[in-house]
Image 1 (cartoon, rainbow, N blue to C red):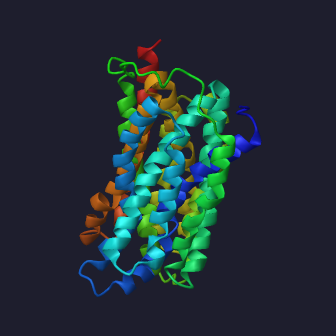
Image 2 (image 1 turned 60 degrees about the vertical axis):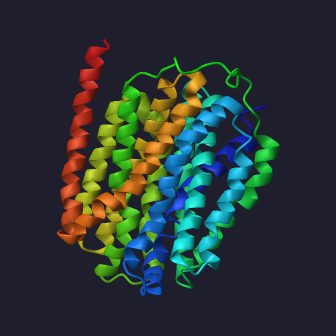
Length: 387
């Protein structure tokens, strides 16, 4: 198999794009969805949970999927995961019960936990060194661009009905034929049934895992809360809300494309320091802007920050993980990634009972500045220790 062919790369990138659309495609639908289920106690909380609920099941599934693909291979589960994606993703279009919709979102999460772990592991299998670094940046860029398309479409379609955006989850129908035609099981000894319990990654990999979870706890406040924040300052059109959220993914794509060049100049720790600093600026702008234009500026800065941090975490884990447990470690990375997204509204939204939205973004900006400083200092400590 020629891993440099455009067909292979396109297939990997399209499967990757399913991850981001699984979560925030329906973001602009949340306010109208809340009205539909307003007869229920805690309707707003249940509706917001539909956005983050898949993340819990992605997190729970990914770590198991990582072990399975190391033992049995990468591709056996992929097509099944794509079919589950369609079934779970479209459930909001035809179901009238919020709890059944949540069950469908859980099924969607299970499918993404499998597919994302597989596709990220395949990238690590197919590419090495500089080629892997470039493709990891391209992967996040395409995921971001896919997010722009699906979030914007979701916003436009939500003006027709909040249910219509759920039909966008039919997209894997386009991808299914390509996975069978162009993706092949890597030729390696990864599937040998040898004990891997004694194979360990360096302990620093756990810092990367926990950092990724924290990163997403903070960032995921944007797709969960920005639709409601914009409504509170007088922005009523769902299409404008969709464009605002999509803009963060657009600028994430720009910085992701540049990731390889940035990484050539900065260490993994310095990239995280830069990313957190940009996110801190984003939250400050949102906190004190109080206008659609300033929110858009905040989305720009947040996107630039996340666009370098996501591939940075992926490449660092790929570099640290021994080959025989690569799928397992990437599964863990996926687990911590989406556990952060699931925990975000559970941990942060309760503060809105005592803080305004602007105050919450303001206080979180201090945490982001601290994290930026931590990784800035950690770079020099780590360099000195390993010199």
